Image (tube, rainbow, N blue to C red; front, side, top):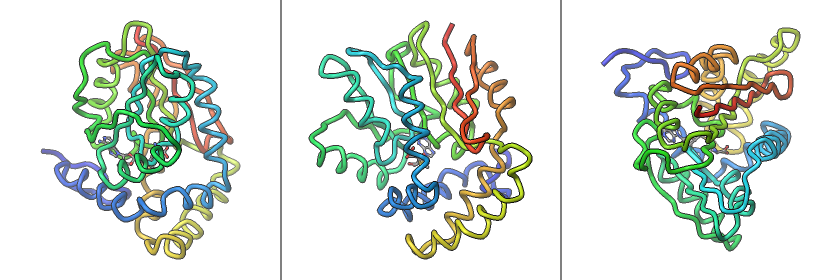
Length: 243
Ligand SMILES: C[S@@+](CC[C@H](N)C(=O)[O-])C[C@H]1O[C@@H](n2cnc3c(N)ncnc32)[C@H](O)[C@@H]1O
């Protein structure tokens, strides 16, 4: 096994998944409120944009990877209707359970699977659409995960990766100040956990920027990849087509 990064720390590849699990075990119950506070509600707009680009249609089969508390899965389920299917998945039981409870409270019963994006338990070409929001950054072998996402898509199917990315140069100083001063304090105050939100800020900086991720998706076999920058690159939506 080689080394990888967990935020700014170098760790053995075999340790990363359990370190990431520790982060999401710790924040699961306060995850939604923290998302609203940290992004000043902007994550809702980023997800709404993702849904608009996804253009899911009635009857579509959709896989939501790293689905966590279920924001995308819930909205997608309404779009595909009773003839379609949205599978809500995550590697973390606490996040998946929180999401499933929230979906049930809203009257939605979705197939739910605890699984690692790097080894998806689904047959080849079984989905029309695959989504992953703010999850890829946490994966140890992003290349393997992208190859798996492609494998389970039908020909012509699309992968949507919504993820933090590289912010435009003029905003970097202010964004860094916010990330390393405000986020950990907010995390401590709301979720009783500064460290997990320091990891968030660090992991964003270690994630491949827009062009690099696009190249990784092409290398994973996506014939066409579009990149949409949102909020000056704070977030980017990468759309890959299996073709
Ligand atoms: C920041 S949350 C995003 C949750 C949700 N998609 C959203 O946008 O609010 C990241 C999620 O990625 C999940 N995750 C991390 N590594 C994963 C992996 N290898 N396979 C599947 N999910 C993973 C975590 O458990 C966590 O629930």
